[in-house]
Length: 94
Image (cartoon, rainbow, N blue to C red; front, side):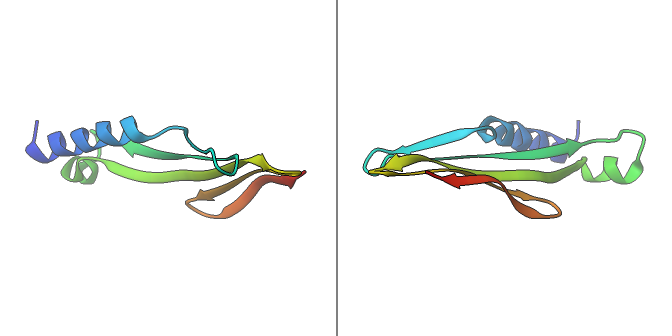
């Protein structure tokens, strides 16, 4: 295995370990902040350009989530960033 492929696979493994849903709780105001990041790795052994580069790592989606309550007010929302567009998946206050 080429050294560059080993480095890329090592970086990919590290990235996968840090990907996924994460929540940070702010106890002072009761708002939870979370999110996710998803990447796609493609290696085509039949494609010379893919073999030369060691594959392709492509961004798929990142999301920010907010939920919680402060006093009489509440919030629940998710905003998504994708390769082609950004949008509010849902959002409401109560």
